[in-house]
Image (cartoon, rainbow, N blue to C red; front, side, top):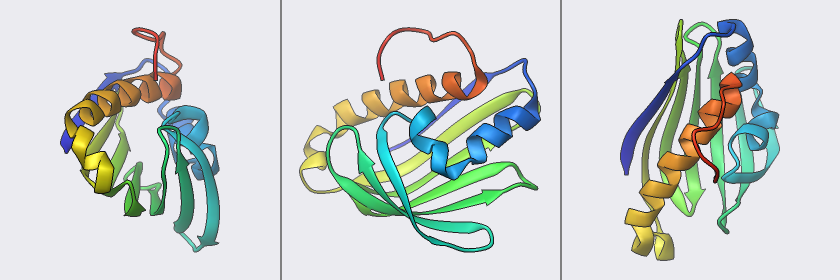
Amino acid sequence: MQFEESLRFEGSRDEIWRRASAIRDIPNYWHGTKSLEVVREGQSMVHAKLKFAFGGSGEADILADGEKRTLTIRYTSGAFTGEQVIAVGERTVSAKWDVEFRGMFRLASKWNESHFRSGTRHALERLTGAQPTDSGA
């Protein structure tokens, strides 16, 4: 599954980046991630165990690049594997997904994409403080 969602914002780029790069706060913005436990922390990389709101768990390596203002999450095991990149631009924040579902989650891949898109829009709205477009994820 590959897609990208983006949202324009009027607030402070620094504040949006502060929120987006706060790795331990990911569940506050990305409600599909129920919990995140940092297992190993390096200079710019974190390895974490994740529990997902839809069930299942996994592990990920998370890299915050302050210079590029990107947060890269590499899902290494669990319901899906692949990468999500959150980028904070001058007036736009975006999330690009490139993941592959595994096991029983592969059976519902069409529904998963719709749900992930909706959840991504809502997460970007929470990161920027924008008014939600509708209720849900």
